[in-house]
Amino acid sequence: MFSESPIKRKLTKKIWVGKVPVGGDAPIAVQTMTNTLTTDVEATVAQIKRIEQAGADIVRVSIPTMEAAEAFRLIKQKVDIPIVADIHFDYRIALKVAEYGVDCLRINPGNIGREDRIRAVVDCAKDKNIPIRIGVNGGSLEKDIQEKYGEPTAHALLESAMRHVDILDRLNFDQFKVSVKASDVFLAVDSYRLLSQQIDNPLHLGITEAGGARTGAVKSAIGLGILLNEGIGDTLRISLAADPVEEVKVGYDILKSLRIRSRGINFIACPSCSRQEFDVIKTVNELEQRLEDVVEPLTVSVIGCVVNGPGEALVSDVGLAGAQNKSGFYLDGERQKERIDNSDIVDTLERHIRAKVNKADETKRIKIQNIS
Image (cartoon, rainbow, N blue to C red; front, side, top):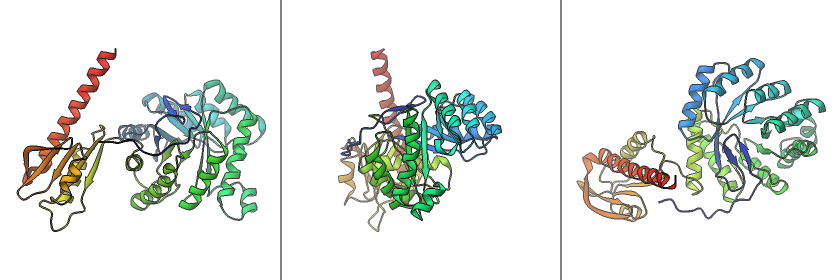
């Protein structure tokens, strides 16, 4: 039971990254980045396909050399998800991947040299309808800005971002999105707030270099949660020292928590105590593993006793309220005559959840047939 979020997003300019709309009234896009060697085409393609299966809308790939650009040509032929090419300094690489069908260029115009080189990249992007992402990072500000502010500040990140925005404005190019990432939560939040007041282009959110799987997820949830709650942000990437698939999962978990976007199962589970009538933690962990392939948005509550179990089950698509030997079972908020044996909870719940998913899929299929 996924209710609409009360958050009112800022209406930004809509652009397209391949087939994915970004900004405007489009859903907030979830993005990640490969961490394989781009020149290892087989490994990179395999990782991209796992990323896509996890639900990512867009994937970014680093293209540091011409050799990597040639590898990108092969990678692009083997995957369907839109790809952003991450490029620094060498404008020739940007021109090459544009030729090979890249969906977006992550390149800061001011960092690629002379005016003629900047104009060559922007003219190419215009000609091929390729958007650009300006990516400002607290750890790599321009030398003069570092000297001016002494340390990364929100105004320093804003000045850097607007420097690049002004270049694109001067060249009459408006198909771009911007990020102002920092590893410090407060710095990132303040920077995005300032930038959101200055421009109406889409903003790509992230807490850069956030840390490992646990600490990085926490920092990202806090920082991005603040911004999203204020209506700021059109795409996001969770930066973890972990498998990129985990970044996608955490991204969706953050959006689910704010009722912005839902994919897969939202588990409501008690932390368990001595009142539990079955092993809640083991049950939920096993259900999560078994049902990772489910993309249909569902809320499933698994509560170990009758104190909170019935109440949570009433607002769940599938609910279980623990009781001695056999637990209460709910579908769409209604208690069923069937009670589930506590020794067979995982198998029985999985069966009911998959049946519900299959029914939803069949309903969608029939609607599509009727429309066509």
